[in-house]
Length: 270
Image 1 (cartoon, rainbow, N blue to C red):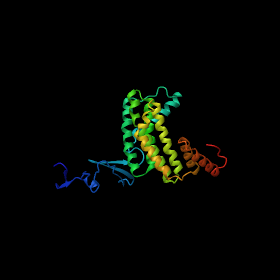
Image 2: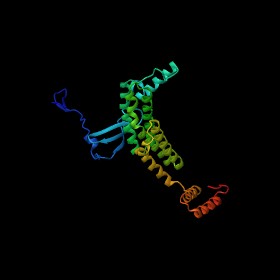
Image 3: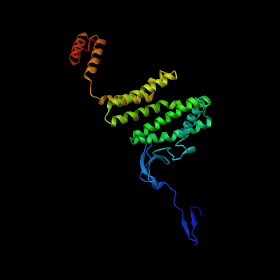
Image 4: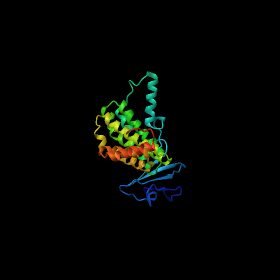
């Protein structure tokens, strides 16, 4: 019978079960939530698991998430980057290097693995890994945009660039925040916003920046950081002075200017 085998003396012996139900016991799927945990594999190395509606995904924490080494490299991206460097050494430039539609499809499929991993790491607040994997997937976009033979392959991934830039900036800012450097965290968030804006300007859609959900999310995160920063009295008075001048409250403006000069002699007129 299927699932059974006979021992040398003819007794039936059950095969080891491959049912994953015991692994999921007590870990229910929650629609709309990202359920992630870290476990230790049978090889003794830590791994990530993401709960899905019909099972789970298991990923390595380092290297390619599925643990494979395609063509002897850490990833397909690493392989193609090595091929590009070799081409540049041999020819002195990029001319003649290209990625076929099959190459680009394989790179896209590989990028999905890293997407699942950096989302999982983000939930676990392991931001260094998020920074690594988002930067890595941005390199996939750059490589395809520059070297894909087919126009579709050059453009299809660009729709994900704002999201990758946002997640990359949030990871960098979160690392700075955890280290207690709020100024650096705010700069990282603003740098991410600038990169998103530059992307829309590059594709001649500057108006889309204001409607971009990723930009809005990053703006909200930047405001959250800014609220935690100590108030700069000079900057605060400058803002109040500018508002008073706009509203033509000249008496208030004069008083604010006097306060500025007392706090910071030599500041001059606003």
